Length: 295
Length: 224
Image (cartoon, rainbow over all chains, first blue to last red; front, side):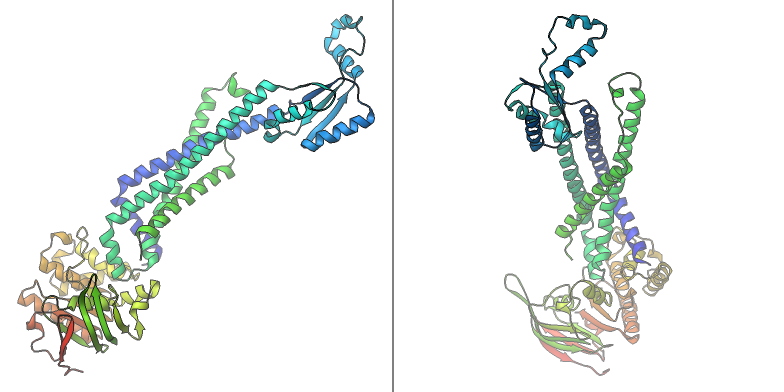
């Protein structure tokens, strides 16, 4: 009989003997993957949302007087020292007046008696469209406010801060659920394999005595862990996909979910989650074997 | 060939099971190990199949020091040694056939070959009707024969048998001895530990007597 056929028979026998605990482990692994993947999905969608909202984000630095060409260069240099930015644009008093007049449209008559230099000059700073820039926009704003001659720095402070805290909270949840995933997969699989080993102590001892090699004895347990990982993570990801589709279908139409497009994981991320789960489960069975299956 | 040179075995804290045993067993020899209970017979068999490690001395099988073998090499050596343990070591939730097959499965024998060999052995040991019986439901005598069948199933080059006739009647004892003699004639080295003098009384093979862990006498050897 070939090695793999014998090993598969052993795996089948083990699963049959301990099907109750195996099923519980499978459920736990699936649930852990589901919980982690759920929060990770929300988190990754929030990152996408952040990128999109960041498109409209710019900081406006109001200055007390029009900067000369040399000062403009100095200011631009100082801004770029803090962080990479997408663009820096200086808006003069007259440009500001023209913009304002354009915005007023038909009502621009109200500006007739007002001097053309009543609006302060400003610098429009557009940060890079990534979450890091978004998260440190407050710091950036304080930095810009510290420039001499700055009257005020304006940006969509409220939503940026709320968004920042929300993504921060999500990242903590993702981290926690990731830890939960690691702990449950490793420990539950290790515990189940341990139960199997203890339940088959007499047989394992006999196998050693009749000349079974280390691979013959250990491979079935490794395969069990591997199988738990494959099935558990696939069930978890599939359940999340079904849930995702249901939510999309159920809440389609005008509403919060339509503010931006919710997307599922790309195949590469799905396979990475499955791969890592398989690795963790195999690690769980390997550590148990090292501890309880000394040959 | 099996060589034991000044082999001693002491169990913690200070129980001396064997002391200074030196003996050579030729390939293809049938060797009897006799002595009272606690004389050290079982310990000696355990040392020969590397189930235990000697506290002192050297054991070589076919020129290999077995207490230094590990992993794959040790597993391969064990496949060549069939052991019928005094406590049987049967898997009592498995059938007779499964118990016998286990020693052949570890060396990846073909399933049809295993089935044929199991049926053949059960026939020789008058256990044909117990093929699918769970071993936990067998009598002590039947379990003993299943243990023996498992020991010789893989056609090992050395067979170690611990009290093979302890629970058997005269007729079955004769069957068992006939089977062991057949294996011996087929070239296997047989070491039988027993205190049943009916099986070695008129033997022409060598008989070593142990007393309190020491070699008391070594006699016979006409067949060599």
